[in-house]
Length: 423
Ligand code: UD1
Image (cartoon, rainbow, N blue to C red; front, side, top):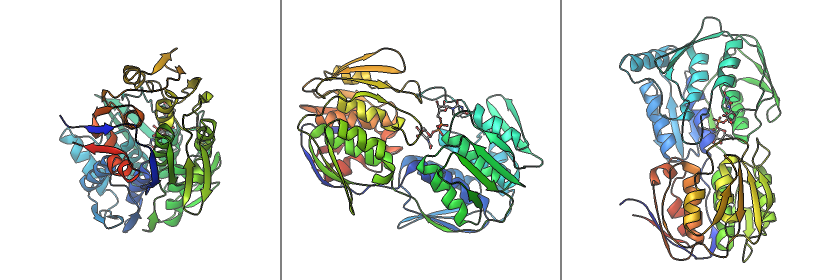
């Protein structure tokens, strides 16, 4: 059987290179469609989600090549080519779909040529993931939607700027509005925008292409639309979620590690320090000195940036199973993000789920190795962390979920001294 074999209990020590950010790279790749010129996206992670996105861009008529340190995208010459290709796929019963992250093609293709049909991207293992905020905002910009047979069609005769207030700072909705607004006529103001570093990265890329955006990193973005965009060269920032995963791995196993990008990880380093780690920032990134045994954290709650990220909640939970004392986790972003509680309990953890949003974790001294099945990306990585810290051997199946977001989690933890192999 294919999976990840882990011999637990090795202290982790050393340096690891952190890959480029998945959640920044994907909307930026979508944004390359908005120009007719070549863009170079450097530091793109070589992960499954990016490979699938590259495949989609090729299907839409772009020439996409991997280069030594990134991706070269040459969009098709005509503005309506990608939409025409998307339409042809639809006629063949292959509407743009597959992954939630292809949702950013909605804003990009509307910005490019004003129409798109895609499979409804809702529903996945970490909850329903509605898209009402995307739809409502784009409707305000003149887009008409039609839902039929699981397909979502969007068309804008006159894509125009609007005053949009998001009732929740959705990352994906903010990105879709940005992608459409830079090409719309007039100004768009987004109030209640997401402030995630990945949204800032998209704004930086669009600005480098010639777009005019004010308020980057703040909850109010002003986009002066309608200008011509040109190709550019952009370096994707390093992945704060991957860095956080490795940071929590080190707390679970003892030992220390150099990390990056610390400036986007304040809530994470604060949580790590409450667990007993010492985090020191230097030119090389973040140095983590882990405690012999982690401490309980009291109450940990996830929230929109700059609060603690939902994508690291599972990793924190894996560590807290071995902490001294009782911890409480409140998941405020996605339901169904406690699926790893069951396999962790099989390893000897004591996690009680109060409901889909609240978990109580009574720390135990040791976990023991088990066979586990990863059934989603971040939860899968957290099971690897538990295996690294447990006594004895663990085996994690469902590796392809982890490969959606981690270039090579086994190689990286081996760099840090772990005994872990993909078999
Ligand atoms: C992005 C990230 C994901 C991360 C999440 C929150 C990508 C590819 N994915 O996902 O890794 O966990 O941000 O940081 O970048 N919501 C609605 N209606 C909508 C849109 C969202 O109710 O139209 C709700 C969602 O159900 C969820 C919350 O808003 O409860 C946050 O979702 P959102 O910020 O949109 O996350 P994504 O962009 O899907």
